[in-house]
Length: 310
Image (cartoon, rainbow, N blue to C red; front, side):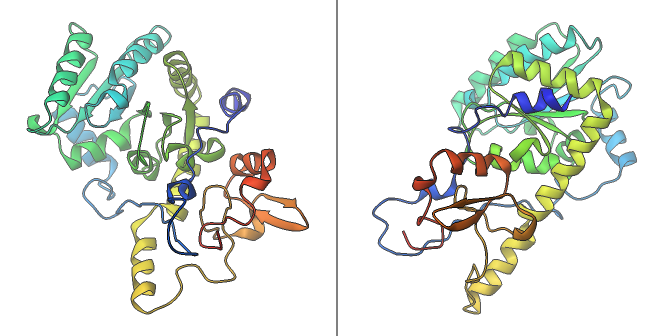
C-alpha cells in the first residue's frame, strides 16, 4: 500500500510550492522572510467538539453515519474542481457501494460565478441521494464543517489551482487523511505523503479514495502524521510568537536556525531532517521531496535562502 502512495510522488518537482518564489526579483532588500499561514486551533471550525457532538451535528443535517463518507470543503469555484470530485466519487463508489459524498461551500452574494458552479453541481448530483450539497446559506457553518472534517473517512481537496489551501491543514489537524491536488501550498502540507495522497487526475483521486477506505490502518497513520505536521508548522501560536518577537526587535529567524533552501520553511529539528551536501556545504530540508528537488538543480538554491543574502 505504501508503494501505491509513493507512486504519486515519483517525478514530483514542478508542482511543489516554494514560498521563496513569491519574492519579486527586484525586491529592494537583501533579506526577506516568508512565513506560511496557519490555522487557529481554538476557533469554532478547529476546536475539539468531541465525537458525540460531531455525530449529532451530522445526523441532524441528514448524513447517514452508518455509511462511509468523503467530503470536500471549499468555495464553489472551478479551480476547486467540484465536478471532478463528483466524477471521482462516482468511480470510487463502484468499488465502495453506499459511499456518501458531501460538498460544503460558502456562497457570496456578489459572486455570480459561484452560483453558476453551484447550479452545475446540482445538475451533476441530481437524482443521487448519496451526494449531499450544503452551503452557509442553508445553515452549514463552522461547527458543521468541523464535524465533517472530523468524521469523514477521507477529506478531498482536488484543487487545480490554489493559493495555500489551509483547508487541508484544518482536516489534518482533526486526524483525517486528505486526498488533494498538487496545487499551491497543498504539497507543502502533504510533503512526502504525510497526511494523505497528492493526485493529478480524476482516476488517481478515485483510486486514492478507494485505497484509503480499504485500509483503515493506513488512513489512521496518515491522519496521525498529518496532525503532527500541522502541529509543528501550521498552527496560529507560531505566528503569535512571531509577532511578539517582531515587536521586541528579536530576529524572526535566529542566525543559527536552519532553513529549507527549496521551500523556505524554518526547520525546528534540523538534526533529524533530510540533508544533502553540495560544494562543501550541508543543507537541510523539511521533506524528502524538497531534498530531491534540490539535488536535481542545487545551483538554483545555493546562496538564495529565504532570509539570507540573495
